[in-house]
Length: 384
Image 1: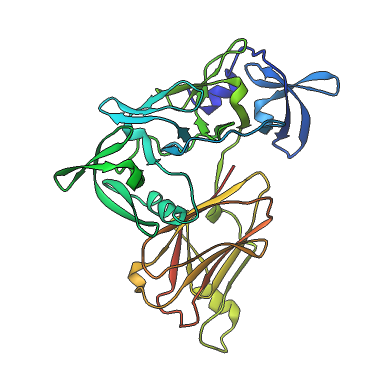
Image 2 (image 1 turned 45 degrees about the vertical axis):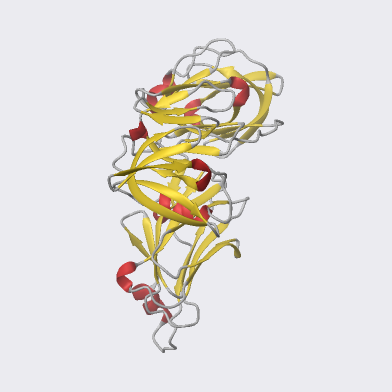
């Protein structure tokens, strides 16, 4: 059951405890009211003394108001369809990956549908390294070890099993038992079964984000039965729903129109700046990536419905890794992320936009010339 079908048959009717929400329509209008339920193709909102039926195909999002977000468990599982699920206990064996969301039914999924499992909470000390590793394609599984000084050490091999304390890992034919308290996480390699992010998303009060392809009919106050794909189902209690998005939760920045682009040569020249920017300024690569040379900057508008900006940066190995180079990301001309890249290892970012209106990507040559200062932004994207 895919997204278009879900819009026709999500539920027959739901009756539940009323809670206040803000609904945003596809044309940007906002409606404040009380959530009353969902029919087969409309959202029911009590506003201005009456119940309004709002067609799904006219809606962008529904945000629940006046609730307290819950502290999520430390472990986070990223599915290949874009779902991110916080889990308490977690297990992986021949039967698949068993995920235990807080106060929800357990979910068992085949490992081919799992992208990463991170055992530790997000932290500024390791986020750039972890996100860089997890956003890079791997043919084999990767065991990510936490070394002293918050340095992450990736080791390629095969993940054999995971229990409460240990990851059993095949490292070049030798089985090792890696203590989870010494790991950052694991990254599963190979081609994933799902490679497109479904256009419908539910966020729960623990921060888990569920990407949907469909939904079974519901009655009364029973949990919503969601379809993560044709074969994978889950149930979310109504009282745990924090937000629903009916439009795609991802937009690739490279497909947007830049509002500004410039290149400043390290060596002074009389060449027309417009001509320099045409040859050496920011470039689109592979429809999803951006390439910037040292001294380059590109800026885009941030649509207000997107709340995060994510991606990976990596120094181009073919250009030679020499000299200093720093990548800056700015929101409304304020630096919100900065990394010095002295090697070709990837670094990742996932930033809250906090209502910013513009994002700028900037590569600083570091004052020692721009030879080898070639940076690739891998799939920079806006997230709801």
